[in-house]
Image 1 (cartoon, rainbow, N blue to C red):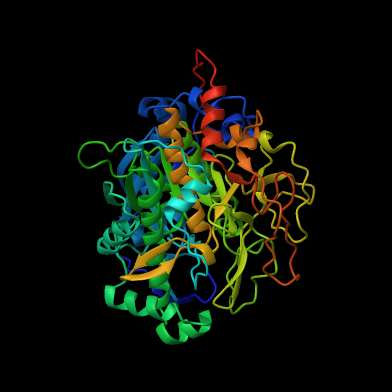
Image 2: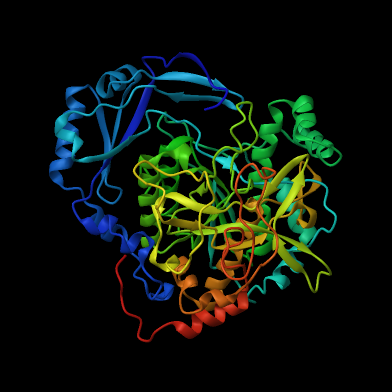
Length: 577
């Protein structure tokens, strides 16, 4: 991580846990069809929703694999905490020294601007008897693999939630039996702000539940907003600031805490305003690739460490406004986390992800000057089994808004809808008709040459421009929402309302959107671009049909509801995967 400094070895006596991810015996657990290559012929409402026992059967790595890991643990003084067929993993616990010895690494604590993280320089070493059984080892490090995807600034035409509902033609449905899960990697929200926001929007507060997910060091995430006094001071200053450097000089590291607080607050408040009464579960995740895996499994009722109390209802939609470059995750972690997203889909849960706020760069300016060197797409938005949400700008009278690809300046920084071609995930069949050419300098994973045909991002797009953002309440101060972090909970709320209106589960919606003219339920966005690097890095322009700025376009809720209801076959076949 840029700017990181090795501080000290991890305390040898510190107790840590690791997740040993095992390969399932059944090849269908990783089949191409389920990973998004299906052409969209399967209606979301016709997909089989797998239960725990189904996952355990499909992902079972076999008794021999569990025995091999248990023997390895015993030989190195590690304790088997639990094993799961459904998650195809074994959780081992031991001291940092025992883990160093077992895996051939030296754990160190690194400091950076936002805090500390644990990591190692050495490659993990597995004994010969485990190498063909193990997909990966997570939890030794907790290097942050998340960036919030948001913006704010001085609004010129703030829109109300009701105006956005009208523009995107939200279905008129009571969504009180729907659940929206919000995944967070830090920060928090002040309930007083959410209450004030709900009153401002004249909507009742739905049930909001905070769930902390424990990391490999045993500590759990929690709702931890910046102190109200500090949040108020920064929010007030933000309204009149001219640049990010000005804000950094004035508030230092507190500015990072404010941005994560704003991220969580925006997700919660927009879900409250637009969700139609849907219950909201806010999951606070630990850092690192292991944190991504742990929180996703927790959200679908397969938590590491077991559920405490009665099982929680499954969400209908998961909204993720965080992410990072595919290159930051690396190919091994991309595969492991995408496998988890595939399990989420198989449980019948739809996931919406932000496509990023820095155009084709997807990197914030940094001292190393790497932000305009390589074109990247945001993960998990690049997963073939999620709905990737780009950003648009809205202008004109509220009753006749015009939509273009979002590209604007926020406190002196150019920001735009993220989009482009994945360098890791192959082109899914549902995007087979797309003939775009990736911009020069696009990141490609190991083994993928210049002719690689990757998954394109985004799929849809919605309001992301702070100039017309919904006025949030943060630290008691009104600030406009923005970024693809605003577009994503907007889309998730619309889809929760869509699920309520049609009565259909929506997992698998992405491939269906591209098929059967379902894309006609999105209004085409044909103007604008996502150039943030003044021509020094390639970029994409919006145009007729699908494009790498706004995807299929802006979703129309009523048209989607009509298309979903009209195309469900009867009787619905049971389809695995």
